[in-house]
Structures are given as C-alpha cells and as structure tokens.
Image 1 (cartoon, rainbow, N blue to C red):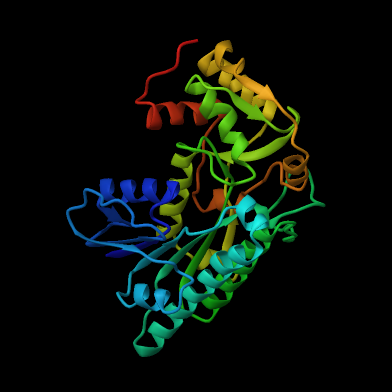
Image 2: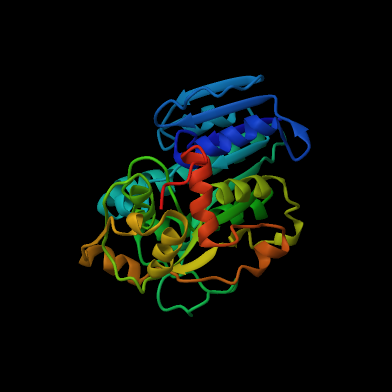
Length: 329
C-alpha cells in the first residue's frame, strides 16, 4: 500500500504519520510507501519502507499532478489555513483551502482518465461548516450555514468530495473534526486556540489568557481521537454513506467552566490560578457563531469513537506530550 499525507508537517499530520509507522499496516494491508508532503519538508519518520518527503504548495500549478502521479492508494488531505488566518487573509484562505483541494481532486480525476484509478481520499473538514441559527444539539441532517470564510471553504470542499465520489473518480470520506484540544506546541492562528491554551499553558506552569466567558460551550476531541477518526475513515466500508460523504465526528460537549473544572481535578488549583480572564470582542464574536454540541448518530453507527470525558482529554495530553507525568496539584 502507498499512502500520501498532504499536510504531514502539521500537528495532526505528524501524529497520523507516527501511528501509520507504528502499525505498519492500514486496513490489513502492509504499508510499503509513505509520501509525506507539506509547504515545509516533513520530518523523516523511522519507517522501514520507502519514504518520499516533499516541501510543496498543493495550490501551485502542477503540484497536485506531481503528487498523484505515484498513484497512492489512500490520500489523507489535511492541509489547510486555519480559521483565524483564513478570515484575516481572504485570498490565501481560498487559494489554499479551496483551490488546493480542487487541484488535488482534479489531479486524481485526470490520473484515472489515463488508466483506472480510484483512491480512498480522507478529507479533514470542520464543524465550522455550521453556523447560526442552529439547535443546541446539531443532528446529522442539519443544513450547512458557515459564517466564516474557513467554514465556507470547507463546505465547498465537502461538496466537491461528494460529487467526485458520486462520479467514481475517487472514494471520499469527509471528517468534520471537532475543535482539537489540547494542541501541543506553540499557539497557532486558529480563533479556537484559546481552548487549548487555557489548559496547555497552565499544565506547563505558565499563564494563559481566556478571551471568552466561562459559559461558552463547544465540541471537542483530543488529537489521539482525531488520528483514530482519520484511520477509521481510511478503512471503513463507504457503501453505507451513499452520496452523503461527510460525517460529524463524535466528541465531548463542554463549557469553558467545565474545561477549567477538569483541569482542577487533574492538575490542581495552582494550574487553574494561572488562567487570566481578558475579554476579546473579536474572538467573542467568532465564538457566538460556533456549534455547541452534536448528536453524531451516523458516525457512531459506522464505528467512530472519541474520548469519554474532558478529564480523559487532559490525561491524553499528559501521556502523549508530557511523558505521562502528572503536574503537581
């Protein structure tokens, strides 16, 4: 099996690559080649098979054609400009998030026109495809009403994935990721970054800024759960999906107050004391239009699973990013 990961240098791309290397198989088939691509060269994994590392912009002319020429069996399309940056830089957001996606799908179609070819394509979408008005708990049949450029770009990507799958050019699965917490490393430009920051920084003994009210409720999953979503999407039987190729992923609905309570239970009051409340009207406006909870019946029926509690999300971070050592209470 040949696997292509587009966006392999990002947080999820790195974690997905490590899991693929650790398992050495996908869906019962041995992985013989990994092609890892991003705008910066991904790190070389300790993989026994063939590895192809490239620094390439998917939206650049001819880039997608070059990547698909190797006819990967499974393509994970993770590359994207995050929400805050896509809103701040309109042209860049559409170039990367929409034009890059369209170029990839078109390259697959063109390759299949030469000789039959229909890879599994796992597309990372987002719950940002939903915007107000929506119910307190969003079901699988709720209409897409994105209120940000990022959400619009992801919604268009979903439609393209469904149409190219319907026409038999590829076998696509769209994974609408919850907000991923706790993200390791430095903050990115995502408007949702504070959800991780108010946990990650206090766990490291550093101060964190909370720009929204404690009552804000949102939908979350850990990076470990997200990698599980991607791998399951790459191996499941897509026949039950029909033409509805994108799925709401399972997760944990929690308020900011419940996040902080989980932090207190796992890491103690000293960690909570490092959170400084500093309202930000711009971020508050973003958050007002974000979904709060989901009933992901289709995904659950197809075998997708997520974290069991917010305490577990924090423990996953401690295990995966802090060597399993709990901070002192």
